[in-house]
Image 1 (cartoon, rainbow, N blue to C red):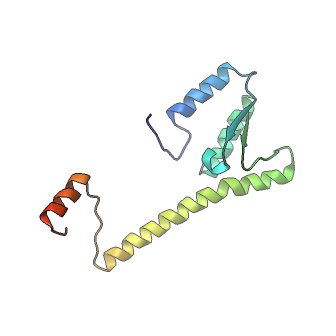
Image 2 (cartoon, rainbow, N blue to C red; image 1 turned 60 degrees about the vertical axis):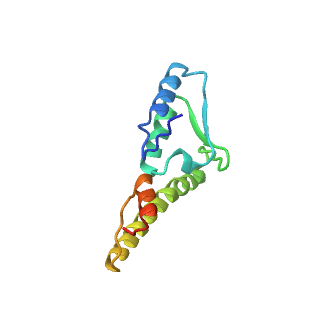
Image 3 (cartoon, rainbow, N blue to C red; image 1 turned 90 degrees about the vertical axis):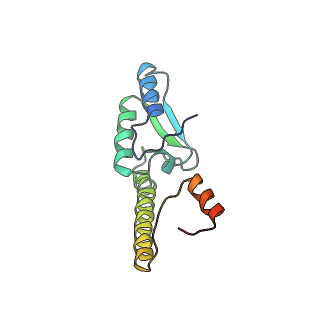
Length: 128
């Protein structure tokens, strides 16, 4: 099984699901996810996809964070559930950037080594 991770909904399996939902328009009324951060880690894309699903007569819903979106206050909770993972990604990216920058300033360097390069390094007992 091939796992594709992307930051948007342009994924082969998701596109297949949308095609299936269009074909079975009146037979499927809900798509379940574990949590909202598994649905999307981008609030804007998530709202757009929720709108597309709604036009197909399908409700996006989660198992661990269920929301009745007909209750106005739950729309605020949805906003928090959708924004939090995006903020977390942005924070992680900033921390990574600053950590790499600090390492360079301290004289370190960063590189991605292949498994073969790591084995050769160990065999030669050298440090790169």
